[in-house]
Image: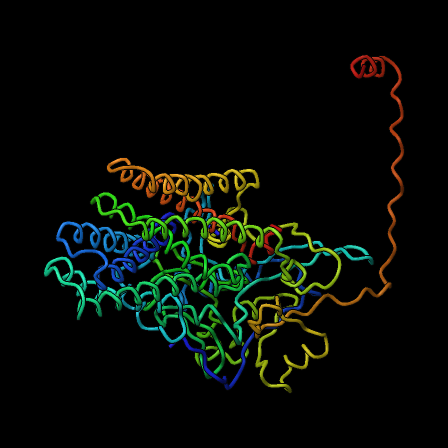
Amino acid sequence: MTCLPSHTDKKLGLVIDLDTCVGCQACVTACKEWNTGGHMAPLTDIDPYGGHADGVWFNRVHSYEHTTELGGRTVNFPRSCLHCEQPACVTVCPTGASYKRASDGIVLVDEDKCIGCKLCSWACPYGAREFDTDVGVMKKCTLCVDRIYNENLAEDDRVPACVAACPTSARHFGDLGDPVSAISQLVEERGGVALMPELGYQPTNKYLPPRARSGRAAKVDAPALEPIRAEGGFLGWVDRMLSN
Amino acid sequence: MHPAFSVVFFTTATGAGYGLLTLLGLLGGLGFTPADFWLGLVGMGLSLGLIAAGLLSSAGHLGRPERAWRALSQWRSSWLSREGVASVTTFIPACMFGIGWVFLGKSGGWVAVAGLLAAGGAVTTVCATGMIYASLKPIAQWHSRYTLPAYLIFSAMTGGVLANAWLQAFKLGSTAVLSWALLATLAGWGWKLATWRYNDRLEIPTNANTATGLAGGTVRSIEWPHTEENYVLKEMGFRIARKHSAKLRLITQVLAFAVPAILLATVFFLPWPLGAIASVLATVAQLAGMLVERWLFFAEAKHTVTLYYGRE
């Protein structure tokens, strides 16, 4: 049923640190690599080497310039499914293909039931769902449901592929429903925020805003540029004549 | 939002079809319009034909149309599923009414009951269609109190104008149906103007700051995650230039409201067949105008995901 569970035992999700994300896209490629052979496989690519490359990705990294009265800074921003507690993408689904698991809160799509009406992608404010035009069904982040419980993997590897790949440990995985879990503590400590809270989707994933400026950074003012000296001689004369 | 022609045609055609079915069920079932084979056949054919064509067109929009039957299962949470259930269910009393009124030449009794049930089903289906759009929070232009009444008014309007043309063509013009068509057209015009006015002044609390969780100051997109348009941008990042939108709003007003209103007003004074010709022209202009209106309904709707791409 596409009705939501009244309670989920766990609230598994990601916490993304916007302070340490360097925008290297490792999480993006690791996600694609794992998931194109995983639960929602394949993540179809259309015209991958042509002029109109398109395809299904579960994770997209944007870059922004955030300017305040204190100055500007570049913020790299990974965007993927937030596994909301009130996922309208699930309740709008007419077929029961979309569902939220009562055990861990993960939002999934049953590809065999999806009719490809695309309404769930309209209902998601975050653009997390991508339609596979080749297969005709909707696809989305599975929180690597086929890794996190996978007993064939070493215990350290039982985390989503994006988390395992991140070279700066900007991505964290855990139970956000448990207030004493390391990930909940991290959100508490760093003032983690939900995206578009005003829409009421109650995203499980949280984002840690960049830390406050410390003032410890070296001041590197570039010297002012000097005006170009007027060229003398024949070339200078040519330049002046042509400039007139 | 990307205005997919299949969906634009679907909502316009079924709106008119259900509007006409409502009037047929009420007028025919209660015996206000005589039970006549050819009159009934053309009326029911138009109505059910528009509905069926619309539903087929919407199925063409699906990635896996062969699984469309599954859409009838989640009526407890999904307006799209409710629309499916209501549209399929409405065919039962509509067909019974059609058999009784058209083929057996009856009205009153069980035919009246079937007619009233068909009318009720038609209104319910249009409500469900309107709610699909009105319930989508990421699209502020749709998630408003204007959306559901708009679907109902436009269905009553196009159905009324169509019903008038149908009766006029059979030389059975009714002042009541003509007045209804004219008043509904004027009401539709007023509602559309009020909706545009509301949308143009809309202040949306969601912005690039709340979308990224970066508080204060400005958030400017400096690099996209991809070089080409992806599904999200193709489906939800549709943009329309302000000047085109102004022109299309004018075309909508002329074709969907002004021309039909003037033509319908003249029908009061025109003898047959001029009145019938004017009524048919009013219908053609209005349906063409409503296709433009519905195209704009999508094109002018802005999804919150565009904020991530720096499209304010």
